[in-house]
Image 1 (cartoon, rainbow, N blue to C red):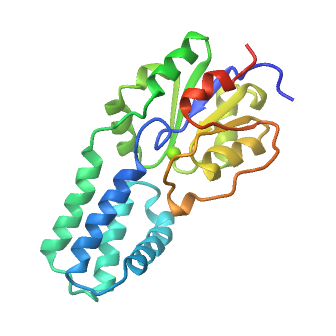
Image 2: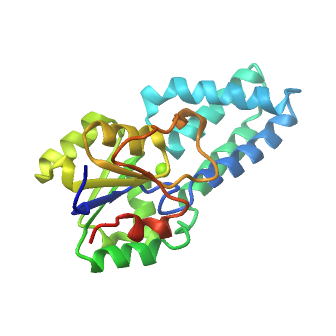
Length: 236
Ligand SMILES: [Mg+2]
C-alpha cells in the first residue's frame, strides 16, 4: 500500500522520547504511604478511587501533573471524610511540584534515531498531549527541541486533532507517520486518517489510555524499541 517512506515523521513525547509514567507510578506509591496513616484501604481500592477521580476530572483539568495533583488531594479529602491534615495536603502538593521540575530523562536510543532520520531528510515533528506549560518545560529540559521542525502541544490526540495539524501543515496522510507508545492516542486515530503508525510499547501504560492494538492494518508496525525505527521505515 505504501511504496515510499513517509516524508514527515511525528513523535509522541511522554514514554516515547522521554520517561514519564514511571514518575506517576513513583508518586502514587508515595501518595499511598501518606494515606496509609489515615485510612485502612487496600492498595487496589485506593488506586481505583484515585483513578475514578482522575477520569472524572479530565474534562475539567485536561491531562497532566497539575490535574493529577488536584485529583490526589480531592481523593485524600474524600476517603478521609475531610480528616486529612493540612500538613499532609502540603506533602501531596510538594509531590506534584517535584514531578513538574523533575529532570526529563530521554529514553535510550532516541537521540541517535532522531539524528539518523534527520540526516535522511525526513521532516520531524513532535506531537505531545498535556498541560502546555509542563510540556514546554519538559521539551526544553529534554534538549531534543532542535530536531523538530514542528512542535504541537495538544489537549487531546484524536482524529480531529491530527487532521487539523496535517491540514494546517499542508501534509497528506499518505506522507505522514506517527511514532508513539499509546495505541489509543498515537496509533488508532492516525491509521483512521490513512497515515502510518509505529507502535513502540512502553512497559507501563496509564489505565485510561489502554486499548487493543489493531490487527492486520497495512500502515501499522509494532517495534520492539525505537532503535528499530530507521530500518522499519524500510523503503529508501
Ligand atoms: Mg506517550
